[in-house]
Length: 474
Ligand code: NAD
Image 1 (cartoon, helix red, strand yellow):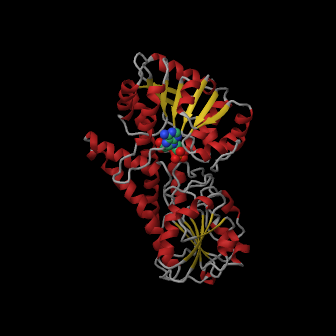
Image 2 (cartoon, protein in one colour):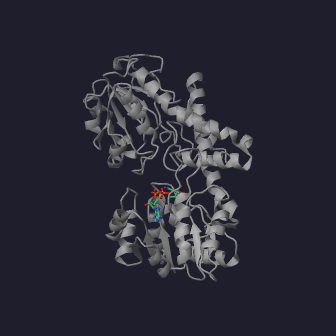
Image 3 (cartoon, protein in one colour):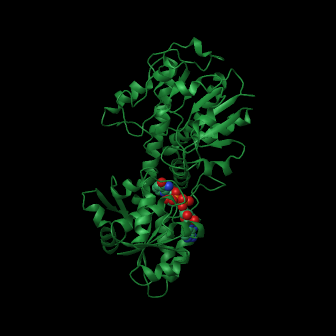
C-alpha cells in the first residue's frame, strides 16, 4: 500500500521507516528540508538505535522516498499519517495543536476521493472530532475524506522494536471502511497476534494521554516512597522489587530516582489537566497536579542533596554530571531532568561539566553555560562531586578505581539508583543514592564526607543487582 507520513521527527521517521520495512511504499514529508535531505541520503538527524539501518535499507530499496510537498503526498497516496509535534503551549498547560491543524488545513483541499487521514500525534481528547469537521469543510466539493486517530506508544530508545512489535494497536475510526484500511496497513504487524483495539476517535485519543498520565503517576509514586525510605531507613530497591511481584502493580516503569522528563510525559500530563478543566473534571484530575509538581520538585531536591555533598555550597566546586539526555537510549534533551539539575548547579556557582554519549550536540545550544563532553574522564577530571543523572548502561561499566584516581574528591550521587554502589564504595567513594540503603551512606544533612570515613565493601545495590527489571521504561 502507498502511504504518506507527514512530520518526520522522532515519531514520523520511525513510523515511515518501519512502514517501509513491512512492505509499504512510503513518502515522508517534512517542512524541515535539512531533515528531508538527510533522510533521503539514508541518514537520521537524531539518535535512535536501529533506525539508521532501517532508513538506509528503506531508501535504497526506494520503499521510502522523501519530499517537502504535501501536493506530492496527495498525488502519491490515499492514506496520510500525521506525525507533527504537539508541544505544550507557551501561555498555558494545554497542548499546542496548531501544527496538526495546519497540516489538515493544507492537506484537505488537495485530497482525492477515498482518502484517509490518520492522526498519530498526541492530542487532547475531542481534537480529532473537531479536526474531522474541519477536514470535511475544507475538502473539495464531492470529496469526503475521512479522519481516524491512531495514537502511538513507542518509547524513544526502543522505538523501532515498539513499532514493529507493539504492545497493542489502537485505532479510533468513524467508519468500517477506515477501520479496514488501517487493518490493511497494519496487517503485517497484526499477523503476529498483536492486540488490536478499534474504537471511537475520542477514546483512542484518550488512551494515549491516560497511558502517559498513569506512567507519570507510577514514577512519582515510587519517588515518594523513596523519600519515605530515606526517612525511615528502609530500602527503595527491595521495596520496588517486592511491589513488582504483585501483578496488579507490576515493576516496569517503576524506578525511583530523579523523575521523568522528555518531550512527552510532562506535556501530556499537563495537557490532560488543561483539557480536564475545559471538560469540567478538574477535581477528578487534581492529583495529577501533584504528580507533576512532585516530579518537578525532585530536580530541586537533587540540587539540594548535591549542595550538601559539596559541603554546603557549590561555589567554586567542580561538578561532573553523567548524562544529558532525558533518559538513556536517546539524544533527546527536551525537558531533561539531568540538564535542569546541571544548569541549577551552575547557577549556584559550580563549574559543571556534562558528559553524555549521544546528546551533547543537542545539549550545547540549549545550555551553552555548561561544559559538554562525551568523555566521562574529561568530565570527571578534578571533580569534587560526580552526579549520575541519566542511566546510560555504559555508566554501569565505569571502573570506580580508575575514576577515583582522576577526581579531586571521590563523592558520588547516584540519582538513578542503578550503579553498583558496593563497587564504588569498595574503591573508596562516598556514595549517596535516593531511597537506597547504603552502608556508610553520605546523608543529605552531612556537609562534608571525606572518603576515608566511608565503610567500603557494603550493601550498595542496584535494581539490576537484586534481580529487578524496573528500568526507565517510559
Ligand atoms: P518532533 O518535533 O521530533 O517531530 C515533529 C516533526 O514535524 C518535525 O520534524 C517538524 O519539522 C515536522 N513538521 C511540523 N510541521 C509540519 C508540517 N506542517 N508539515 C510537515 N512536517 C511538519 O516531534 P515528535 O517527538 O516526533 O512528536 C510528534 C508527535 O508524536 C507529538 O504529538 C508527540 O507527543 C507524539 N509522540 C511522540 C513520541 C516520541 O517518542 N517522540 C511517542 C509517542 C507519541
